[in-house]
Length: 358
Image 1: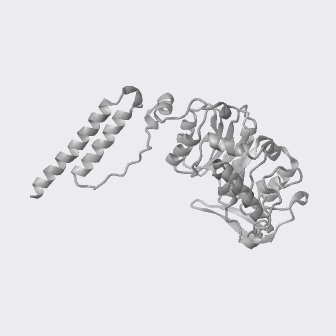
Image 2 (image 1 turned 30 degrees about the horizontal axis):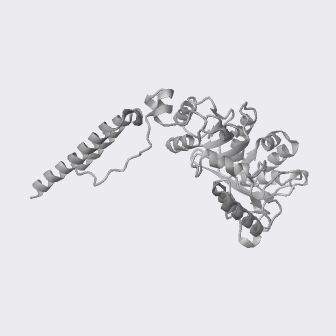
Image 3 (image 1 turned 45 degrees about the horizontal axis):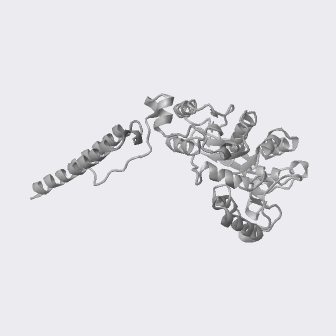
């Protein structure tokens, strides 16, 4: 009886397989991406084999896997469906710059890069010095297929919450400021990010800020004051890294600056990026921040809050700012993208300490 059921199951499986292959074979050739038939047949054969052998009841597959290592650039770009032509006049007139801080998971980075890639944009990728040589080689090989993407000219050994993390972004920013691409905004990301909106939707969202930076933040909450009041040191060992609290108090910030805390992930105009890499106040703040904890969470917002800065929702109470943002969201769904509500609702501090949104 069991043998008969087994035979019926096999006939059913191969019948379904035959129908699928017949259907695929009848599809118009122009609608089938190059290499699709081979990949589909291979996946189906693998699935049937493990089912027949009784190893699994179902098969989990990485549907986005590629064979980049065996392809040349033109084949890889084509078969991976990268966008190679600007999709609209609006996007052509509003190029973006991206930084990506990276240390592991090449496949995840590849998906991120494929999702955000546009030929009119420009991309700088920073690979942690701790990353394996083979990992960096794979990243470099991928970026070599695109004329508007490159590795940062300087690399840092990144320590979580240390100055090296901020410096990684700044290294890319310096390279991007020199780029011939006339980008309007810079967005900093990490290798585990993924976009929630299309390039055009992100542009629509950024245009709504009318040339202002997006650096949400608050006056120093109680739990974060010690991050800039005491000296911290990066500790680097062969198996791990960490930040050491020394209990030694720091000197006051340079130029009488008031320190604010906010998101490490921001959207910055090109004009502001030029100010960050060249202005003496920015350079001095960076130097002062080198022995603080998680300086990327105070550096951007503090600079943007300086007199003459151009920030979004400056000086409003958090409640008023959120109302303003929600109204914008109702008028434009794209406001809900990563550099909008997702940053403003970051729980940086208890409600009672969120006095001012910067």
